Amino acid sequence: MEQRIGYARVSTSDQNPDLQRDALRQAGCDDVYEETASGKSADRPQLAECLRRLRRGDTLVVWKLDRLGRSLSDLVQIADRLRAAGVYIELLQPRVVFDDSTMGKAMYAMFGMFAEMERDLIRERTRAGLAAARARGRAGGRKPKLTEAQIKEINEMVDAQKLPIGRIAELYGVSRTTIYKVAPIGRPEPKRQN
Image (cartoon, rainbow, N blue to C red):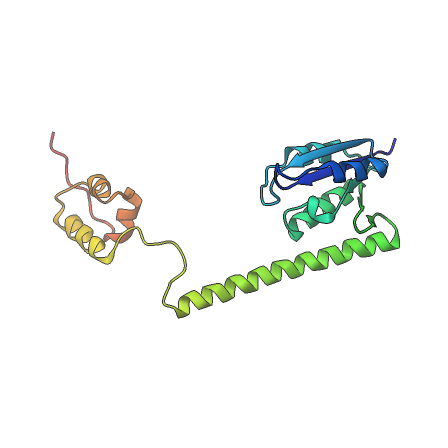
């Protein structure tokens, strides 16, 4: 038996889900899953439970598209998962149905194009931000674990063979691997005195 299952989400506990719940019930939803969570939070247990419950031929009904996902790419991922499972999506505001009709298929296709555009824009903004940071003299990436002066000191210690590599690593708060990376390779550790 095909079901209409609703999903409502409010972003904060201050917001009231009654409007969404009432609209979903009026739209003929058998059950309504409600969530109070930020759209940025990946932890949405009610949505996960709702998606697990849906079967081929069922329809997931939501008040608005932004209630379903955190971003366009998140929405596309959810829509693709539902479409592959034979589940339809119905939006109440504006009234749109993502199904097997010609219009529904066109909506899925547009959805995918917008998600790709969003990814491209994010990539563009990231590149522009990195270029601007480089222009201001800031290098990207992780901050080095050791300064040039520390690397010089480590090399001197390794050359003198006064301390084991493990002890040098402890002194500088890094791993033995880091010491081996910055010090000349092939140096044996000094013999330990008992």
